[in-house]
Length: 435
Ligand SMILES: *[C@@H]1O[C@H](CO)[C@@H](O)[C@H](O)[C@H]1NC(C)=O
Ligand SMILES: *[C@@H]1O[C@H](CO)[C@@H](O)[C@H](O)[C@H]1NC(C)=O
Ligand SMILES: *[C@@H]1O[C@H](CO)[C@@H](O)[C@H](O)[C@H]1NC(C)=O
Ligand SMILES: *[C@@H]1O[C@H](CO)[C@@H](O)[C@H](O)[C@H]1NC(C)=O
Ligand SMILES: *[C@@H]1O[C@H](CO)[C@@H](O)[C@H](O)[C@H]1NC(C)=O
Ligand SMILES: *[C@@H]1O[C@H](CO)[C@@H](O)[C@H](O)[C@H]1NC(C)=O
Ligand SMILES: *[C@@H]1O[C@H](CO)[C@@H](O)[C@H](O)[C@H]1NC(C)=O
Image (tube, rainbow, N blue to C red):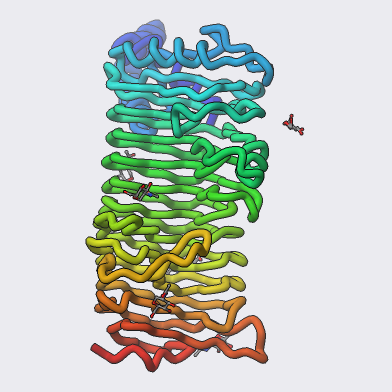
């Protein structure tokens, strides 16, 4: 791969025409074979052209590259490199050439304070992160809710084998001691269009690890996200007010939801996720504090859940409004998940006895199809819908969940849930009325 990359770069220096000419000149020295040579050179040059387009398409080939070390970043893990990163970003963002990139090189550790990389930029930008980025090992005054923040960028690729280490332990401790009310979220993409985030590892964020909000078109793939099971509110990925998003081929294990999906999210696909430890893949929480939720076309498929507290979950607060509809959970495997399938419309964080209200987010057209494996708790299926606003169009199909404790067989619970079952459904859900 690296060889190919260098070869393409070498070729680019000559340019298509020059490259063509070079081969032809070399050939023409062997007069008698000129004719054949010309066509060979054309063929080689065409292959070259194809390679150039292919590599441009996959973003390997770069235009101008702004290496943060060229702007004074030390990468010694102790010096604050925030200003150098800002300078490299500003240079890249104001460069109008195609294929502009910012490079955070491998083999170094960069200490960054809270920082925003803002557009709009003159062209789309590739941020290659191969080194480690470290948060300060101290708490700070939260005038920004994010540690690393990308905003207002159209065409943003963030890729590499780097590690984003939020050093959250100090914040978790501070929260447990009630000395901090909240903590920063590690890595945010806000108000962007056409975003690709791939390859990176995120660990020990003070709060949520990766957040995407108010963004249209985002592909998140091949991410590894980890934090201890008891770290507070450390969701792996949170999506809010965003459309055309896919999250695939990632491994997420944290102290909260592996993936959580907030209001204003439409057309989101999640697949090939290994989740655990954590609280599962959740739509919500929605409708907090009487707010209006709108969530539609969310498709979760081919995921594994390892010792998670929930598997496929929809959670809404009492008193909310709006809807969550057109949702599917397919081909999920549970390895001792406590509540593999759960709709909970009485969500109440920190168990502070939230009062019941007369309105709720309406949950409809939700399919659970192909859910297998084991449940750590015997109540494997929970459809606890609002008493004021029923859940409708709930389908359970091809479900087979066995209790991890043979003495307590798996059961299902319903409250105001309407819908039907299809195929084999174990445990049986007689409380669904077939409507
Ligand atoms: C971070 O700071 C805490 C408390 O000051 C200390 O216990 C811990 O070892 C530090 N971690 C690192 C990686 O330096
Ligand atoms: C996201 O992936 C889809 C196909 O999987 C592709 O069509 C789309 O262009 C990608 N978007 C970005 C921003 O990379
Ligand atoms: C989600 O998957 C559906 C069905 O496979 C597909 O039609 C749609 O384009 C996908 N959307 C995104 C944003 O990946
Ligand atoms: C809920 O609303 C009340 C009153 O408007 C406000 O004081 C409180 O901060 C809100 N809580 C949350 C979590 O938004
Ligand atoms: C179901 O998901 C598993 C991974 O959990 C995968 O190996 C399998 O191919 C998926 N099946 C289908 C039909 O997508
Ligand atoms: C709210 O209603 C649910 C369902 O009827 C019930 O289980 C719960 O105890 C009620 N909560 C309160 C605080 O009254
Ligand atoms: C359900 O799963 C159990 C354990 O995985 C298996 O033994 C059983 O044959 C399955 N039942 C059906 C109907 O697929």
